[in-house]
Image (cartoon, rainbow, N blue to C red; front, top):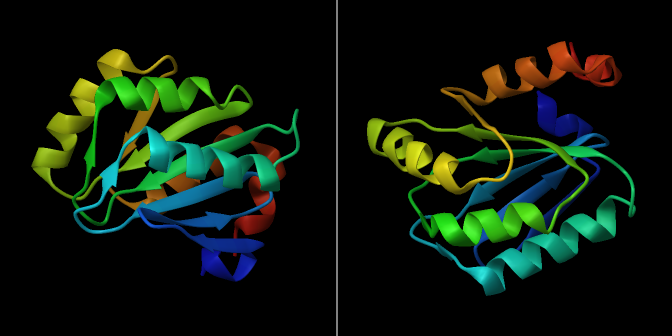
Length: 135
């Protein structure tokens, strides 16, 4: 479905990134630790794909359990000033409680979804430029 529109896939130590024209989907690896070193790798790859002033949306598709410090999340989000929105897809209750804690530290609102399709629909509704992904 949506992955047929993927422009670039990058596999890092802690996550897989799927780049689209207007958004990136991150799928962290099982039991990985997303620390500042890992965040720097992610930011580097994002900056390679999206030009300096190009806005984009970020979707964290949390299909696996992993660890991130809320303070490191704040730092990570601040490194991406052209990020228009940050969406998190969670699939179980513990993830939701972690998300609530993370949102206390995030410099931008975190939008929670229970399915990846819900996150994509939210983007499609708010941004007409994303209408090409409807099929």
